[in-house]
Image (cartoon, rainbow, N blue to C red; front, side, top):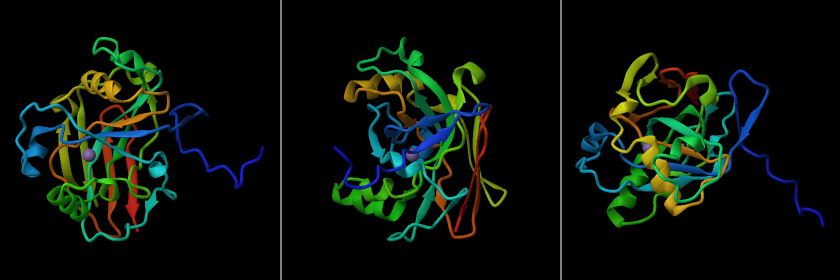
Length: 228
Ligand code: MN
């Protein structure tokens, strides 16, 4: 048996302080997980069950930290997020067991075609083209739990051209990382290589060509991306 064309490149993230890479399996994202962001999106921060969407694994790819402004949108938005990397398989994981499945953390951008998302919301359509486009999930290097511990608090910020656009603290999440893992693993078997984007604080806004983004979560390596 042979493949009818060469196998696609496996998307990977570098593991900080090692020569190793983390092969990405799936990308899950949590919607609206910080109350200030819910207000700015016109929602109420009641503690409704969290909702999820996904992106293709190869959305982590970028070219030398540059991302081309995507087609079919006039309103590309930044969402800075803490990203949890899964290292152990599991389904129906309990909240108390959840952190045992965490391999590490990174800083990621949930890039969003906001105009297409708003249209989809209005018409009750899926978010795939608004959220799951090429290069829509750039991430920094991964840090292992052994190195940084379990992250429960710490600042999360996004600067665009040096100016602060988003600022919050990961302790402000409506659904904590153990709760997210527990609930998500009821829908899908989580696997080593899965990434979970955990939601963005308030301050989301539009990007244009030439913008330089610097995303940071305390203890983690910054994510630096330029839109071209
Ligand atoms: Mn998001």
